[in-house]
Amino acid sequence: MKIAFIHYHLKTGGVTSVLKQQTEAIRDVCDVLVLAGEVPDTSFPFDTVEIPGLAYDKEGVKAHEPEKAAEAVTEAIFSKWKHGCDILHVHNSMLAKNKNFLKILKRLQKHGIRLFLQIHDFAEDGRPLAYFPDEYVSDCHYGVINSRDYNILLKSGLKKEGLHHIPNTVNFFDFGHKDTTPENLILYPVRAIRRKNIGEAILLSLFFRNNETLGITQPPNSPADITPYNDWKDYVKENHLNVMFEAGVKRDFEGLVQSSKFVITTSISEGFGFSFLEPWTAKKMLWGRNISDICCDFERNRVQLNHLYTQLNVPLQWITINRFYEKWKSCVLQACERFDYRISEECIRKAFDSLTKHGLIDFALLDEAFQKQIISRILSDNKEAHTLIRLNPYLSTPGDVSDNASLIQNNMSAVRSNYNQAEYKKNLMDIYSRIVRDSVSQRIDKNILLSQFFNLEEFSLLKWGDYVG
Image (tube, rainbow, N blue to C red):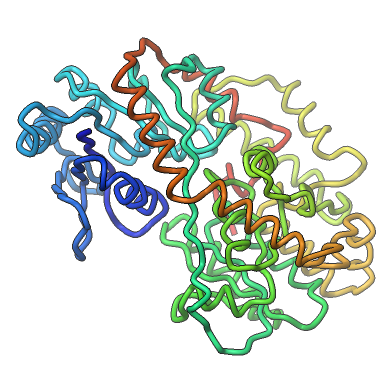
């Protein structure tokens, strides 16, 4: 089978890692070509063609004509294979990182090229600046990395025969690779963007029992995340907290994980959710926040995650409730405007009443300014820490369950059995066979799609709001 892949770039990152895993998985049964807007300085292990018209838009640089970009893709494919490819496997086509990307794909479709569009992220999931005004590509096969997105796209108009669940494979840790540096470290292995809820990780560190240091591995890349990240660094320094930023910049990642006591996650938004799987393969305990609609896939595959919490409740009286409501409501209305989405005042008020019932609010719904108020309150009055423990009993035993060793062994085994390359290859080749065999007539209803993500009872300022310091 002849498979061509497309992505905006081949820089280091999550989607590029998945693309590499896919090409590695099928290399002995498929002929592969990789097309990208930007290629890495180092060599890629497959035939690679750079097509600038596929790259991210750049401010001040004129975009390439979609017709010319489509012609360049077609020429590259037919230069390698006389009769073209069986499938053009496209990654993340629903993010408007290149404003002409959908136009390019639709032109390729008219040239008779069979498309498989694999979605890792949705602009509708709190990313309005990456939202396409155009209709998404119709009459082609789609793939998603979790069952939440699968069910959302079914509700949005896609058909089971044209929609495929393709969970990622997991890289297992090498136990022959040791970092012998002794550290009293609890690790949050993450690139510290806002959705990773860094403030909550810092809050958890106040409850560590043996003076451990919280290690956050990587800084953000995007300009929108750098300012809040630097502000957290300043806050930690001013308050003399046991937090180490950029712990993984000069340290080997595998060794860093293996030298840590355990691993935490406080993220409020994930595509696949590697952070819920990878630590177990390093024989490390994972503790922190459960994202229910992501973790349900793993739990169906015997990965036990019920020791993770789904909320971290704080008293509403600890923040200025009227100010929070106005900021939250303003954020909702701004998101509606950006997505051209309508919602009634009554729905907004009812949702707010629901998420603040019992006089409590989930810490993850607050923005950085409110989160700092909570942390500062605990730092100034140790009795308030006991209040949080009463509301969230798990805070009294961070990283502990009744039988850590048994849980780690069970989850390591489940991850190895279900997320290995052999299983991944089998699933991917089965999907390719169905795509070649079955043409589909289907389209995505964008209004329904947006409504599925626009859940006000989980509406976090971290995810949907602009940073204001």
